Length: 192
Image 1 (tube, one colour):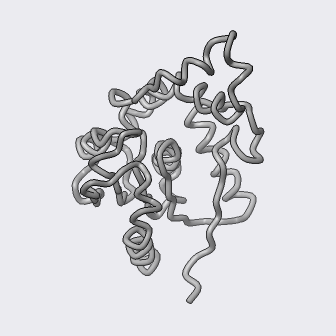
Image 2 (image 1 turned 120 degrees about the horizontal axis):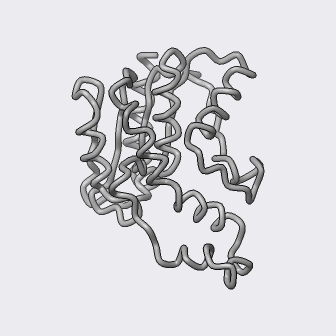
């Protein structure tokens, strides 16, 4: 039963998209997805964003509501005040040790250093979002704090937000709770 075509994209700087060169602007990342949709003549989408991919798909929904029918967020890093920083990231910052760090971690650290500011730039746009959002977050997430769920709840009208808390869930709920997320995604696609 074919319900949709799945297109998976790397964030810029990862995979085959200019690997090793960070694009820290969330707006630029979102525009890259819009470009893919335009080139493929895709008029309506349901977007899924996990972790740092969350703010990118939210920004796309904010800027292009005519394209985005629904957003599914999985443990997204969207709250500027709840950005978690890991001391290990300093190794990618310091010139003395940066050369030892794999490219993927350098890109992640470059993004990390600007992420809170990028999220702050998005803050005024939350009032303009009209796209329904289904949001999953584990209450034991040690990478992206559950406080991000409280942030979105304060930003979104309750009739546009379906907030699903995974009790005991970690940052990897997309894998550990796959069947539950898949069931909801299929329900969303049935209403497409």
